[in-house]
Image 1 (tube, helix red, strand yellow):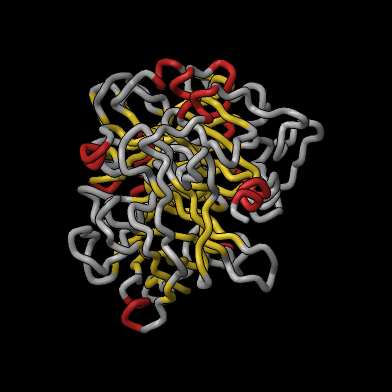
Image 2 (tube, rainbow, N blue to C red; image 1 turned 90 degrees about the vertical axis):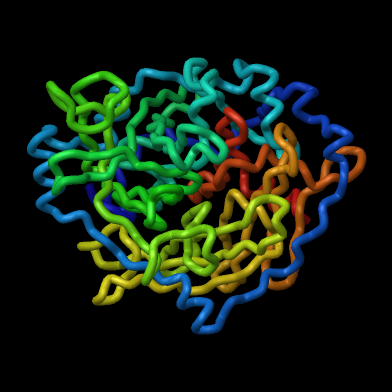
Length: 444
């Protein structure tokens, strides 16, 4: 597999397009109404504050920790030869429902302004469970600038078991979605895991996957809860097959188990705050809540946000790390000789409770605009999508009272598919896409 435009096996007639021509989603009236409890204009978070002092930037440093190659090789020797994304997609055994087939309650979670041009709901078996919650999304548009991974266009969605405060004690899984045909998206599951005992076994990743980015051949995800690292890294060429069904995770009598899933994705590296592990009770250490990719920076960069709870009035930090340009370090962050990763820039926003972040430049010399998603103050309502920079902030308005609560529920991360011009996100049990041009129009 070649990266960054070197594996351009483009297929004609099957490209994913930004807008379904001449078609708008037939959302129910309930999805377009804002209740009286939501019809209040939120205060603007104002302009971003640049964090430029050595102390502020120094707190954001990370140390790279690689899983020894011999551990990965030992695990592969025991479990069998690793496979890639294509093999996982060929085994897809579930289908996403188109918006027209979603329930009324599922459609109510979708944004009002701007209106999605595509929306899907998960297989009923996955949509019905309250044990797992979808929280993050990334695509092959992040992985490579031609938007495809080999011959496939792919969406990945990170889910956490537990929901709410219990999520930190649960497991993490990823939906591998075959997005070649926009009219029929199919998917299957892989469990995220961490090798232990020198590669003789693995454990489940005990973390909320509230943010994820697929860049080149690596998948980077947020870590939290019992994990002391800020980020975990997975190699999408090293997907292993589970051989035993059941709820167990790891080596079991007769083979390997992955909580009932067919595939398991072992971590190959992690990033930990310099001098300490992630401790969200101790301010300073970088423990991201959300991630996205910025292809407008040079080099490409990983964008991160960290926010206090909704209503806490604790500011949100926004920052970025550059990806390495070294072909031998594909998909990893740029690090010094000691394995230290430094932040390139950082800001502070007065918006609290941020659950999604995206950075985008409208031109080569333009300042980056930061798009921040905030959930509503109460469950079941709509959230807000703000666009902030060092000059101010804007949000879309909707409803008779000109409320800013026009986005989805605000609990899903953001991912920009540059080739199609779409912003992908999650709301409730829906996966949806909104053209970035529609977002910009709504924020004028």
